[in-house]
Image 1 (tube, rainbow, N blue to C red):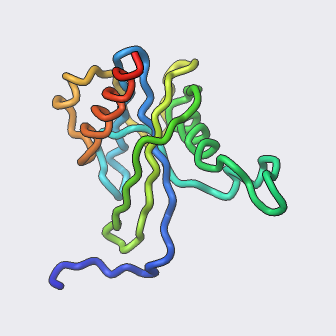
Image 2 (spheres, rainbow, N blue to C red):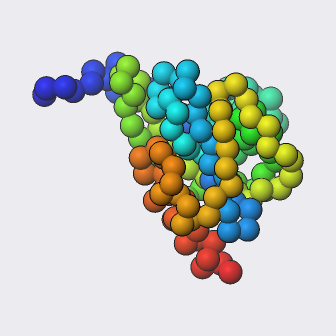
Image 3 (tube, one colour):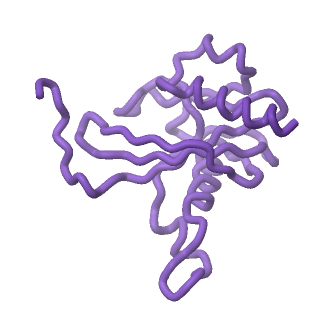
Length: 160
C-alpha cells in the first residue's frame, strides 16, 4: 500500500491519556510548543504518556497489580502541563493512531471538573485559553478534538 506507515510491533502501544477540563461552561485548551515534533502549534487538551511511576508508587490492589493507573497519570499530566488540580476524572472515549515514526498510540480520553490552582504552563505548552463551545472554531485544534469537547458538553448538559 503506497504511503503506508510501517508499524514496528503490532502488539505494543504507547498508552496516553488526555483530559477535557471544564469550569462551568468553559473548557481548557492548550497550545503545543512550536518545538514539538508531533503536531507543533496545535491546540489540544492536557495529557500525555502513562509511565510505570504512575502506578508502582501506589498501594497494590492485589498480589501484583495496581488499580487506577490512568487516573493517576492524567492527574500528574494536568499538574505538570498546566499546574491545576482536577476533580474525579471520568472516561468518555478512546482512540488509536499511528505516529509518522510508526509508533502505535492508544489514547484514553477523560473529562474532569477544574478543582483548584492557577494555570502555569510547562515548557512544552505555549498558550492556554478557557473557551466556550462556540469559540472552538477559532482555534487550530488537533483533528477530532472539537467533537470530543462537544461530547463532554452533551454529557454534562444531560446531567444538569
